[in-house]
Image (cartoon, rainbow over all chains, first blue to last red; front, side, top):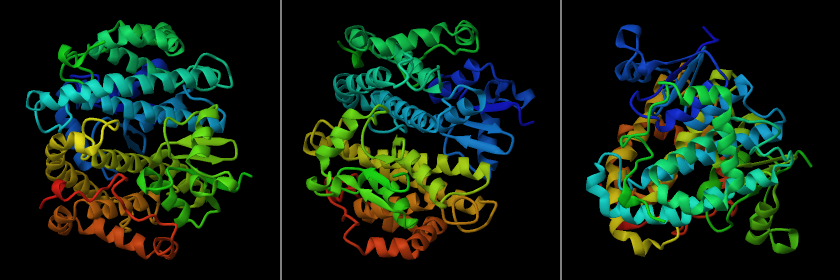
Length: 243
Length: 243
């Protein structure tokens, strides 16, 4: 049925799937988290892989969303599609397009956070690329984290609507993405975040307002929110953190 | 004026700007390549940086596009916007959305190609991260190139329209992106490409059909096409290549 959203992502981690999941939760949309269902209900990672193998519009990788005739992959385009379908997107055309670019920039930032522990490649274990990880994480903390966070801060401050949100008058999927990035960075780089959060008060204020949005607050307190863990994108490896 | 597209990107390289540029060229759209104009005409990299600094919907980085009230960054969303505005996109909704995911997957692939020479960070020279680059490039050649190229091959083969293109009945911006990736990989990894191209004939056929599209063929023969060079994303560093 067209109304229900079927989200597919690895069942054990937040990862990139958490970005569209937060949009579905924030909008209180009817959705199934397919790979987390029991195999007897068509769930599990194997069902997800089968779906990928059989699709005639094949995702390159999870997450992907099935909604009616639509099969859509890539965290940012899925988040945009859900946000635009469910009222968590701006309405003016220029803002709608800008929100898509903000979400994609968030996805890039997340990719760089991932590469701090996998700078050589995902086919190797972290332990096989620790020397490279130490160097890349230092660059990430001191160059990239500051640059990306300062950019969100500026986006919030120059938003012509002066709403305190990133884009337009209301909370959108772009803000949900910033929330998740701040959560992830606090998990993976707590010392660095403690040092620099005061420089980006408008971005942190958005994080806090998202966390207080009732459907999101209920979701975060539920078992549907998978805890951060060291198989995901944001990993608490103390040797990669530093003030 | 709304009709004219203003593309902003670093004037000396193809880089990520080449993806939307190919869409504008392929559609024979009226556009300005602003940073490549003389400063006396409002061009140059400084004018681009000023535009970024003053925007109230700020790009995180070039490329970005200004079109009427729209300021849009990120190569894949810009390509999608141009393609959808200019008739180089699918028309059916499911195909339109799939094309956006294909273009974003291409952008991810390009990001990984970039990181073969900058695996630690962009604030350091290549020469400062060569050891890491040798390892990452090997992973890229043997794991990622094969996986991404095989995915394009499959997308072309299972396209329900059986058109030989990636999405729908006609050439779209998704195909232009694949063309550019093949060009870039041939420049940066000629030995590896010589070895594996025969495995992905449908993808290479798309490359060849795009190259023969008259507006693209004229563009490629023009001075508007910046030659590949070792400041761009795809760099011919022989030590990073191998069969």
